[in-house]
Image 1: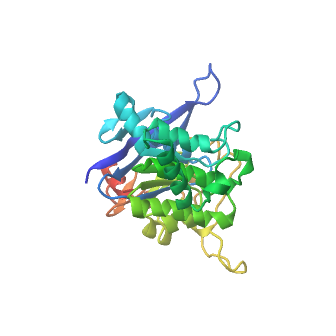
Image 2: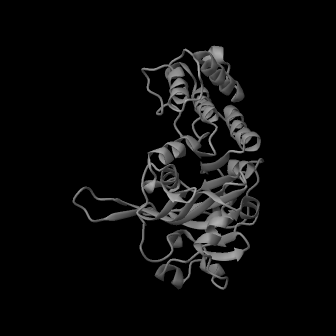
Image 3: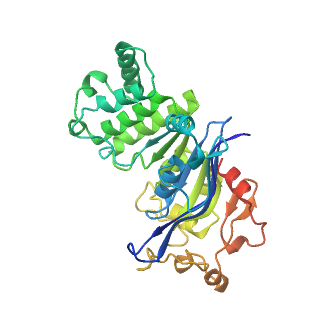
Length: 338
């Protein structure tokens, strides 16, 4: 199958100690994923805060450039596109961000965001046609145009503002939507509505989704495959059904084990997540980054970082528990996330 969008071994480092410092923070290390052109998919990128999820999202969107590796769209690197190719990319790869308020200019009514998209990409030949497109997009995400248009961002709830951004993406008919924690800042009652709108875009319009989340429950409900990150490293990737129901990496096991059960009196059996005070700064160049929190840690875990091992067809895990399995190639890791 042809790759529509591909991250090929991308890494990103930032200067961590000021302008004159040489200290480097590895925000993302050798991550790969692929979105097929012929098969609309939903890929979840999951992990704790600070795991590198948003960094990967920004690389996919072309907001930042990788320090190593390649970001490709239709086989061409993003930073080598000409003007027409970049314009096409901007329309076909859309973003929905976590905070539905920060993306708005408070001095403009929410109409401005929608009208600007219609005008910039020439979606309508007249004002009447533009109005029809906008109203239809709002209804698609469960909003009433008469109660939404003409208002300023602060006059709408967080859920309404977020759904306006989903409507904006719907207007452009993109091929890929990168949704970075789209329901983390809205009421629980609205999460289902927003996720349902995204699922509708995937199933009815053939839009592929990259769903960034720390919530494994919604990742499991929405996505077909999942890529687990820990401190910038890919620790497990594969079919979401297999990864969540039978996690292999100790970190994934602990995260799944921390999901609350419906009955608060019940407790999951198994390992508990250990938290160390220096875990945030433990961005080590040697050894497994999860070693200080892992219940299965051995000497080799502190000496060198494990590679991703191909434990099943289209599934890979970065853990020495599976060192007898073959090392996964970048292409195999990408296909496991497809």
